[in-house]
Image (cartoon, rainbow, N blue to C red; front, side, top):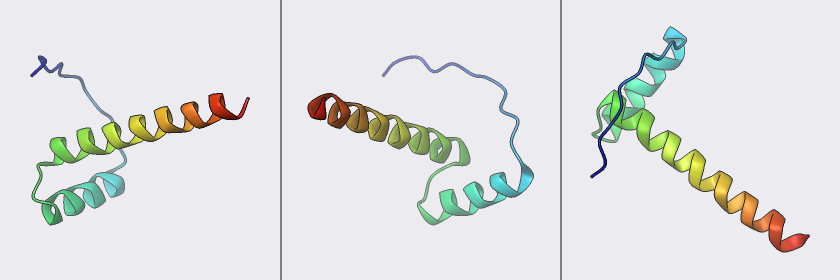
Length: 56
């Protein structure tokens, strides 16, 4: 697995509370949930870019 890089994240407390709740429901840490959500967003972006290239 690639080395992970730490960084500071400023986040709205209400959003953080929702992510913490969601993470607990899916048996992930808060950090793990944020990383999972970012990965899903990146995959969706890549799929969207491929569809755009296919329609041009």
